[in-house]
Length: 247
Length: 218
Image 1 (cartoon, rainbow over the protein chains, first blue to last red):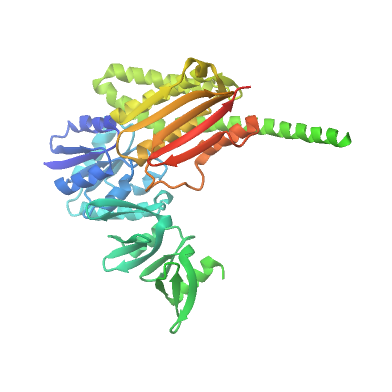
Image 2 (image 1 turned 45 degrees about the horizontal axis):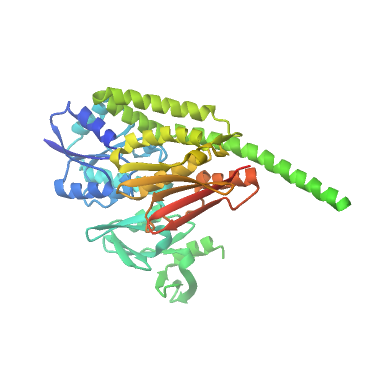
């Protein structure tokens, strides 16, 4: 028996999925969720095999929710959203269903899911999906993190800098720092290069936070931020920085 | 004397320019409205709701199809050049609100207050629609609880004053670079029609976002 969650802020949209699923006795809907917060909780609680996920939802969207899940389950998107050119995710999600979808189209998606080689762990596939999502301009606006059991939304304007921290990245704001289980590469792709520069293997800084750049040892520099933080700038980082600053 | 003529000519030119721009903007507003209603979100999600209702509440599915059709037809038929009574504008708006309520179930509630005198007061057609859309979008996607969107109309002297309120979260919403065609377009249209920049204001207090427009009654 496969366990499934339906996450969508429109009750009737969940109803369609449930109705269509009646044909598949091997899939059980363990819970329905109204938004990403409920979704997160339910994923932790039930460890589902499959999630039907809407993209645009209150507060945090479907991608942002997935980012906060340690081992994401397999995902079928159900969305009317075409702004992201959702096709880009086709290779990574199990499937995506554009609302309104027919029963036939739905059945195809489920059959595709059931036929998935068990050798491809769904979490890896979903990770790749999120990497792809990071490229989409709509994802540039904010960073969603978990602090304890709470979800915090950090508008990118509030970010001072980011630093690599083992397998995580620390996101520094005036309020403090927040850990996110993503790579520096992920953030380098995600953040708008006009405002953020990767100045070092382990650091990305918000350009407008820089007050000074001082020489430091051979070939290296230190960027001094408004907050007083001193960030190492590598040789290649310095070249990039000069380019963006136009100096 | 010469300068008076000169000034009145300038005035006339200004007026002409404003009028042309008002017409262009009304066309843009119409296009915007068309796109709004044909955009995936509203239309496809509404169709998706209908798809769900057909299965177990066919009567409601039918009702929603009619509301959606009436709303779309009303939008196509609207002439932006016209000043229409508020009652008429609210009727059209109501179709839209009813559809949104089916989509979002109990989460969305609306409160509309408008007395008889306000109902017959005039405003540029389709002026209210983008304001209410904005309120609903903010309310529904920026909070997770129940959302009350209120529309209140009052006469203040020679003005029809309309206040639209919605909940929002000051922690996560920021004044963005632009409010999109939505609110900016409303402000611009008011300027072009009445040559005044002080007819729309927005306030963000606690968790409530308020948009107020004042429409001079000519």
